[in-house]
Length: 336
Picture (cartoon, rainbow, N blue to C red):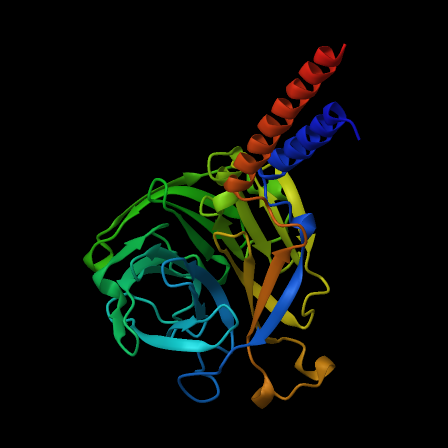
């Protein structure tokens, strides 16, 4: 192959990879692991871990946190599902009776935010393994209304500006973005507005949301503004921009089809983590309740999203090839 031809080929590859870094491209993803989660903190009917409903990634700890919709507390696990610790929730003064925790976000430095579906409230706390978080101490009402069992299903944090994105399950669907400040006994302030018309997502319900600004390969591109939206009812994960345009999607119909997948998060490498409740179709599947567990599902790209450093290597390679090409032309001229 001539040097000039090689330059064209490498430049084309660089262009394709640069384009790919503007989105995760869920079509490249596949399941690379499933892990059963421990059943913790109580007996049947009050077990955190049986109905995992939200998950978030902690980059500074290289671990995951998840909550179940039993609302008993938050569990820290490894990236392969091993239990690392647990913190209880004290709901005194929140006004919650169902303790229906459906959203979770990690802010860094051990600080988390958990949301309660039916009240559309959020609570901030510092994680302490084997401790207890008194949720009313740092709380905010997002809707100022009791929305029932079709309320907030997911919350995600954007470290670039300290903002949040939340999704409402249905009746009606909603997706909000803005800021939250927390205060004692719901004295915090929510400044959240609808991000886009939720019908654009083409989903029958929202189960969780995840910002993508923390994915290293997307930093500095339009892709860092994108979101992941998870739908249990549609059995689908989609990637959208902040105008609601669908950029990529992944069909989850055959991923643990008997389990209810309700939570999504992502790490800096672009690996996606889902959590699923126990088997929903008990009689059809034939799994006794006593043996059921929530599941952690790991999705990874078949061809990884290139890191920013890869572009530098491409550019360096192009520079070298250009130098060789120029030298080659000079040598031919000299021989004449």
